Image (cartoon, rainbow, N blue to C red):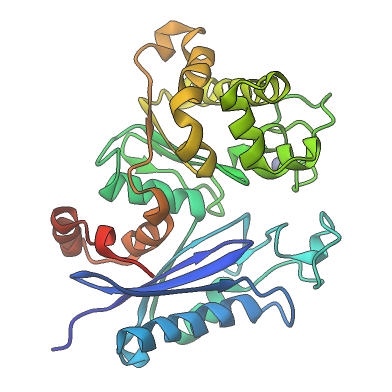
Amino acid sequence: MESLLVGALDIGGTKIAASVADVTGPLARVSQATIKTGTPRAVPEQAIALLKQACDKAGIDFNRLQTVGVGSCGPFVANVGMIELATPNICGGLGHRTDLPNDWTVIPLERVLRERFQHVVIENDCVTALMAERTFGAVQDAANCVYVTWSTGIGFGLCVDGNVLRGKHGNAGHAGHMLLNPESAAECGCGNRGDLESLISGRNLSNAHGIPAPELFQSARDGEPAARAIVVEAARWLGRALYNLTITLDTSVFVVGGSVWLHHGDWLGPIVMQEVESRLQALTKGVSIVPAGLANFVADIGAFSLAMPPAWIAEWRKSAPWQAFHS
Ligand SMILES: [Zn+2]
């Protein structure tokens, strides 16, 4: 009998990555800029084509691939039980962005994938990252933990009492859009003013201050006063958001990924935690913050972990095959 294959899709507003794996680990990976023209089927059709390319690259018959895990940017909406994407960064018909060359309001992601594959599991990208970190990363088997990404956007994956929270349409964890300061002029791609993402995301800080986010954060680290004030305030807003989540969920540990944290978590961590620990200590004492363990592999490995057979987990925990895997 031929060995089982699992596909993984990482669908973002900027790019789509497709990988294929067997029990020994990932075999091939390809990626491409996310298509934004044509019909609303264009994105899932591009994803299927990329999975075929990944199979071709690995020398595998594409017809053998019937199981796919998908981590996707949200928000999701449901249409007769099927997940569709209503993503402001891809769908031009939602009216939040003027630079998108389409009038899509939803993308029929699950329906198109199910036309081709027998088994399809779709989760939002932060739930996917949480699964990766709980299965193979920094918080293995943690019962009460929260994944946080601080990057171009802000997102969360929530686990309470060992249960990964999904919500009615799989959108649990979209707390990047929690409202913190509606008096603020800071604007988010979702249309909100003063939500967490508007106040701290790389994209929104860059737009607000007219400087690329990596430069802003590096200047802040170097001690340039104006940049430092902006970034420290952003870290405080994140800390206030983590405080709100701590008291809401009674969580134990935050595992933080994303490019901002990867490069600056070392000095921003204490600023963030000060905002958590300085309040209501019956609930906040002992809460910790740790960097994500899978770094750049979190999306791919998370998508695999959504769909892989349980027997693969022990194998992959032993061999950590992503460490040897390069696209
Ligand atoms: Zn928002």
